[in-house]
Figure 1 (cartoon, helix red, strand yellow):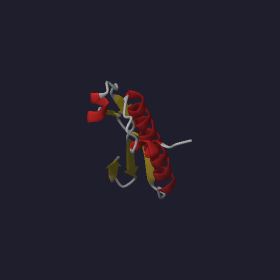
Figure 2 (figure 1 turned 90 degrees about the vertical axis):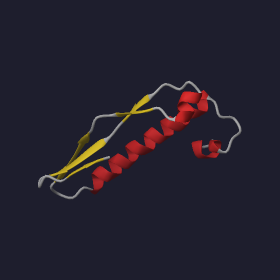
Figure 3 (figure 1 turned 45 degrees about the vertical axis):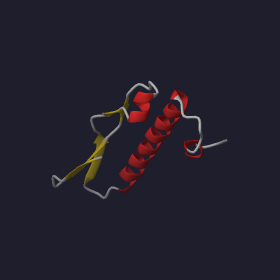
Length: 84
């Protein structure tokens, strides 16, 4: 089974290919957020942030609809905040 990375070098770039790439990217972002949450020290909390809209040039070119993608907000008890 080929991966999305293998397909990046393919001559065939169409809407299906772009959707698969976006799906893969979103999956990787979610996995990264889960990993980050597992690294948080005591006194920090994580919660979902406001989603952002993704509509890259290739998505537009191939008629792929915009996608809401997750964000993550990290807060410490002392008031520090990070938004990813």
